[in-house]
Length: 221
Image (cartoon, rainbow, N blue to C red; front, side, top):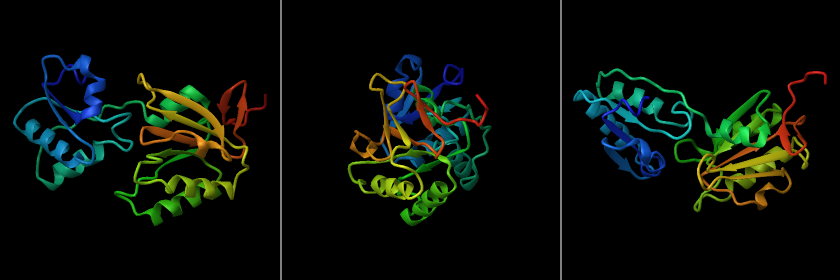
């Protein structure tokens, strides 16, 4: 509904390609990776001109998406336009649904990208989550230029969890390139993992039941 009711749709090129069937008759503005501020500024400018604009994110716009930037930038640049945030399905929850129910109990999500957050800060968060026995969803786990962070994250979790702990990998979930893999903490680094992947690492009670990755809630069954 949000897209169908818009006059202009702004987003990362790949995301617009994925919704091409919804864009007929609409003005579109597409940019490449790392140009989020440019996209957001264009969307706000067009909205200020009176157009109805959809600023597209993948997953949920409030989870590693464009919602926070839109709010911050509108305030910083004095753009007063109504903003509506439309919830979506996060990459972690989409991957979890394909794998089973790994997020059924307390969990955290951490991005391994150090473009906006120092790696030392990310490392501290990983250690805290691992020690707290939380299931974790790792976003942006590996890129061509960033290959050691995921290995370091795995080592941090091995200090607190058995090597047999289930690990699920969801890549490009919901697209024709979707790939779902169920592995464990000792072996998951052998799998193909990239920027379109989300890695879900179980806690100490997580298990595999009939091929499903499950974190029990604690019910007596």
